[in-house]
Image 1 (cartoon, helix red, strand yellow):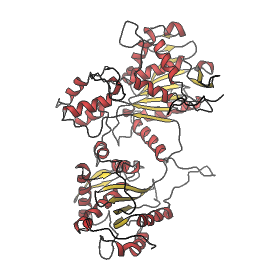
Image 2 (cartoon, rainbow, N blue to C red):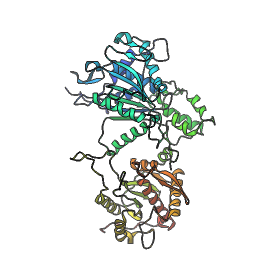
Image 3 (cartoon, one colour):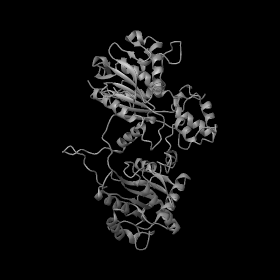
Image 4 (cartoon, rainbow, N blue to C red):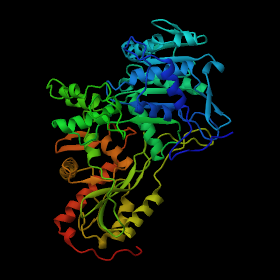
Length: 558
């Protein structure tokens, strides 16, 4: 029979509650000698319920790949060690529903020999999870009840085993592991074999219908780590650029406005990042009523920020769990997020300006995106009208070959026309590269009505490349200052945020300009360029006194 249906709003079928009970009944708390049971926090219990969610009709597991990102000391490694033991011994293979419509499972050994791997790029990293896992297995009755032979380097099951594995292992490929934990994937890169190991672990689990969990700290954008790629894969699903399914990303970081120089702000940021593990006397800030204090020493962690020998960016990543920026990033993630305002809405008929950056088919590499960005004249709120970019994974044609993605020109032209019909557009700046004929058409159609114009002969054309480097540098400086100083807000759209964070600083003789990480990078910046053009157009409109004018009637067919 299918699932019984939700008994409260938001309830979904899951084996998570069973796994939670199993952990408390069978596992010992690591770091103690009194045999106290391992008790996950409420925050960890919520993750278990999502990770072990099952489909309400088929009864099969929904999630096969998860990323759990928390600051150092939160307890990721012992927690994922407990999950590894559950995968080895408990009834975690979804097996439909019982007579009451409740999800049920069976153990892996009822299907095949279960192999569970604790993966990392070095042996020291595997110890993060392996050592507390051994304590949980030895401290209670688990070994006797389930017939485990718990050795220092491997745990033998009656059928199967649990063991650590590193990127140097030559036997990873083809290893039929039904579950793998992957620790500190913010440090897994191509150069240390981490990316290859991650691919192998995921593929091995996929063949068996198994699962993997990553437990990184905040990654540094631009380093090409496994954690960064996993976050990008998940974002592509949310954006509709990928048809992949079954990925769960649970990342929490301190709010972007956290001030590391202000103790009250810093404590609030640490309490949010550490959640239920915070030892603050007022308990956690995630739940109402709050959970009791945990183990993470907030006061001690705060003192790390006063130690001048520590690097601020390391503190943000390790303790606040904030994804900050690459060394050559134009803007940091906290800066971009702090400028977002999801509550501001631009209504039809409001006076705005537009910025446009287009692209076409590339001779090689990945086709750039095309972006149309608006900016409200009254308050400088930047909003996304349209961003057209290739999917994260190319579609495969009938011949089995990837289908080349191209910008949907007709759709873009329709969006521009609709913007002029919907809003009181008083200016538009567009980089005409590869769109010269269309920009010329826009100038002919809309130019006479624009109150702010790039030049008399070309009211819309505004080159972001070429011999206008001084103007480009100044426009970029103005946008950067406005965003970081709180003069500018944006709608927080995924594409705009992602493109702003992808932009890299490039020093020229005229000053700082922006570019992709490298010419063939799949990380696009076109929405950032369009936003800069929209902001420059707004500044020019204000300089002309247009912002104080009364809006006129607009609309019509052009």
